[in-house]
Length: 162
Image (cartoon, rainbow, N blue to C red; front, side, top):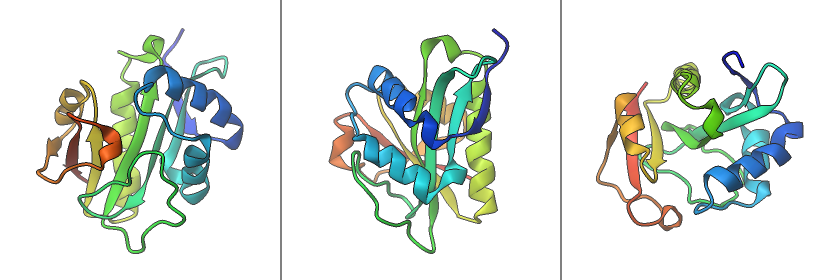
């Protein structure tokens, strides 16, 4: 397999992305309507990682949001805040075979580029599990604000510069 590539997420990808989410994030379930809404509200922030044969190997969801906060998991937004104070990286999930090839680092660049394009002041996310080290490596730092309860104990709200 050559290096997978990121492309815009499509509505036709949502069922497969949902299966990937269930495999990669079993402790953080979300209704399929959440990802579908994020795609509808901000298609420029939704990406699919695909293999040469078009198979979906991962996905990522980002959108404008309020500074130093994130919406809780499994929550429909209704609308995006305007103006937004931050770019929220809501979800990133890569199948194990797609890891270690630079795709996640490339995704951070794609998200950062969209945040710049939208002229927001910062990027924000919640690191769960062992992900905080990855995000620190890419310029994010924990902040004292507490993430919403849906992320569970040990989750860290983090911000990164644009």
